[in-house]
Length: 259
Image (cartoon, rainbow, N blue to C red; front, side, top):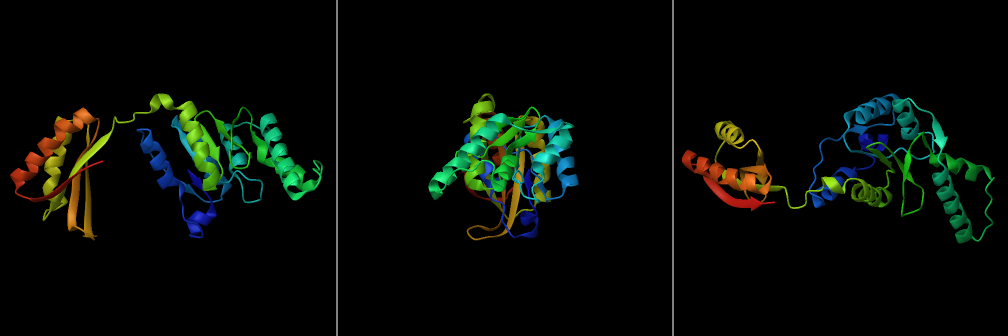
C-alpha cells in the first residue's frame, strides 16, 4: 500500500513496488496485491480496514510523518477502533535523534523547544503497536498485527521492510521453491493458444500458465512469452507438455527462458 498525492499526481514516481517485488523474490515470496492511495483520510482508513481484515502481510509506505498531509497513523487507529498514544520506545528513539542533531549542529539539546515537542508526534501510534527500527535516522515505523507501516523515503523504508520480513516471516520463505519456464512464440494469437493453456492448468493444477504478448519488443518483435510457473517439480512436468502442445499447433518457437 503506497500513500501520497505526489504519486498519483506524477510529482514522484513510485519506487516501492518494484523494490518490494525484488525483496520478496529473494525470499521465495510474491506480491499478492498493491494499492495506491492519495492523502485522503477516508480512503486511507477504508483501505486500512480492508488490510487489517484481510489477514495478509501488508506494508504501508508513506504518510507516517507529523505534517498536516500525513494521515496514516491517525487512519490506522481509526481503522482499528483504538486510540493513539505516544509509544514509550518510539519517544526514546526520537529524543535520541534530536540529541544527535543538536550535537551535530554544536547546539544544546532543548527537549521543551516547540519544534522538538512536535517531533514526538512521529512516535504517536495506535494503541498496541510495536515499533519497526529505522537504521537511517532512528525515527521508527510501527506494526499492528500483520500490517506494517514505514516511511515513504526508500532509504528508510526498504531496510525496515527487510527487517520485518526476516524477523517475523522467515517461516514463509521458499527460496528455490518457485520457478518460471517459458518459451517465445512467434506468429500466433492468444485466442489460438488458450485451449492449450486451459488444458495445461486442468492437468497440472499446481502450476499457473501465463501469457505475455508483446507487439514491439526490441529483440523479438511481435511475440508471446508463454509459460508456466510454480514449484520446480510441477513446472518440470507441465512445461514439456506445453512445448509438445505448441509443436502440435505448428507455431514457430524461439528461445526458452527460465526465471
